[in-house]
Structures are given as C-alpha cells and as structure tokens.
Image (cartoon, rainbow, N blue to C red; front, side, top):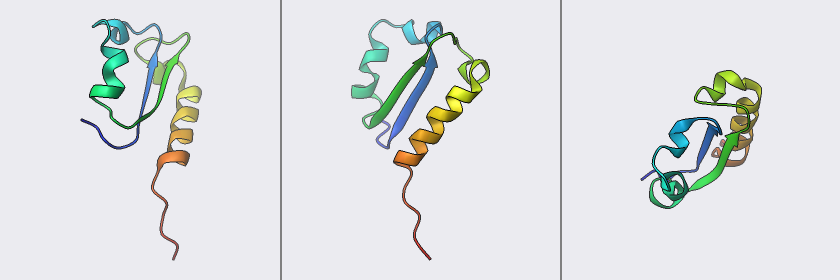
Amino acid sequence: TIDVPSLFVGGKSDWGVYQTPGQFERMPKTVCTNMVGCDLLDGAGHWGQQEQPERVSELLLDFLRHNAPMQQQR
C-alpha cells in the first residue's frame, strides 16, 4: 500500500479511471491509505497534465503546501 499522503489527479474522460468497475472507488481504502485528494478534471482525458497544465500545477502546489514535511529552521 501507499501509506504517505497522496493525491490522484486524472481526467474525467480518461477510460482508465473506469476500466475496472469499482476499482477507482476502492483505491483510497485498498491502495492509497492516506489519500488526501482526488480530482477528476472536466474536459481532460489521459493526458490531463498536458491538456490542463495550469490546473494540474495548482492542485500539486496546494497538495504540497498542505502535506509536505515542514523544513527545519536553521
């Protein structure tokens, strides 16, 4: 399992999300035990990072702001 904070970003039009019925819904319970976010992008398919780079960047930066370990003060 993936037990660290995780984020799933995919396209609503990506067939892979729906390939095995129910698997997407089970993912937070069986694979990513600390999934803190799941975003399916409207108007995007398999290449969401290329189809909507600004939105993917926003989601990643927000995830890192809220889930990255705090750096030690020097």
